[in-house]
Image 1 (spheres, rainbow, N blue to C red):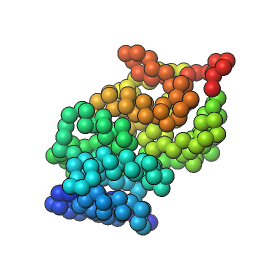
Image 2 (cartoon, helix red, strand yellow):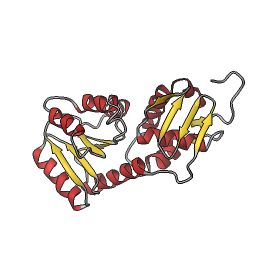
Image 3 (cartoon, helix red, strand yellow):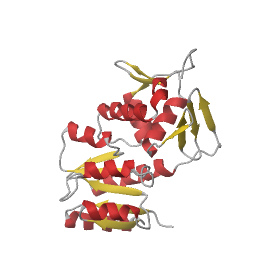
Length: 234
């Protein structure tokens, strides 16, 4: 079955260029020139497995669409690649804070965008073959199902957030620099700043609640998943 990608981009020429090149790569493409139609297409079959989302749309901002996408359990795990003409770091951070998985600033290379699309889809569909289920204090991770619970309450994570959590867990007790996490979690040498890692760790901690305390900040270096639980830990 073809992988479906939804392009929400109000520049008609750019939308057509993206659709053409994605189809050449073998993807099934749905396209929308505005946010309202894009939201409708998110839930209409075939359900997209990735969304390419413009930040500046004529009716609803890409930020708001991303926020709604993440709030809906049916679409919460769909990877989002955000496009924008803005290049300031604050715009990137806002995009990441509402759940975007990657960010491309216009003008961009179509080849680079296709590489990012492939990397996002790879992270989204990758499954561990070990059948591993992890229980660590309040945290339970079902790796094959890509599901996480904290104190028996499920926390819905994006593919990138899940990858970040499991990467830190499997290296527990060892400090991971921001540069290492960018390489190993983001999977490509993307033009993103180390602030990106901080933003995603912040969101991950918020989503896993009490278990967020297991991820320690090592000032000036990076992050570390605690090596063992102390008495009284959640």
